[in-house]
Length: 230
Image 1 (tube, rainbow, N blue to C red):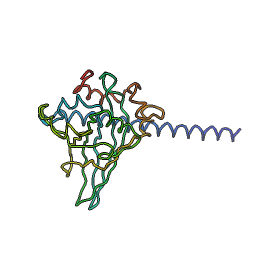
Image 2 (cartoon, rainbow, N blue to C red):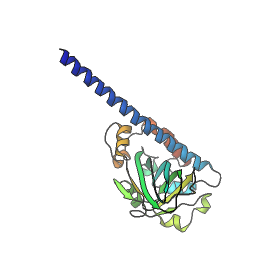
Image 3 (cartoon, helix red, strand yellow):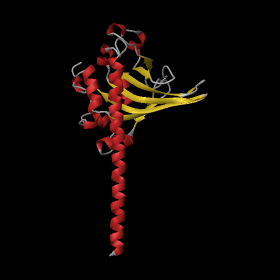
């Protein structure tokens, strides 16, 4: 009987530990989604320096990486975690977000570190298909260019017309910008599982999965600046 009681106690403790770990993971994902919504809203709110509405309305998907970190001495690296949402069928609104992570390396005279909010607009179906892969290289699998800012009339540039991905960044540290060529973007499977309660890939999430409550800050920001039907 004592052995049975001990086994029950150990099992209960293990389950409690697992639940606590899951709660912690969900809290991290919730925070990431909230920060993604805040970063996007703050970028869009800067007068005459936000992402042109005409380009945002044309985008098939949007990737938001809040607080991507870059730092090092001589050889530096960069990385961050965020979320991606795509257009629903017939421009019905933004889909439930899939969680992603970005990593890349760079070489140069780099001293210090910075945190940069990164937004990427995926402009066509081919770019979106690349994005939905388990992993792809920016600038390799899909061309990327710095996106124009300001009023919609500034959007008609060669970069905006040709690139499959337009990138925007807002630096909060020593670095003025961020280079994304050569960086890799991949699905964050652990975060997706924490958010949706089971293993799901980006394609499954963004083709009909209901949006969780935690996604509200990000989706509200997206719908404010580019609502359904745009």
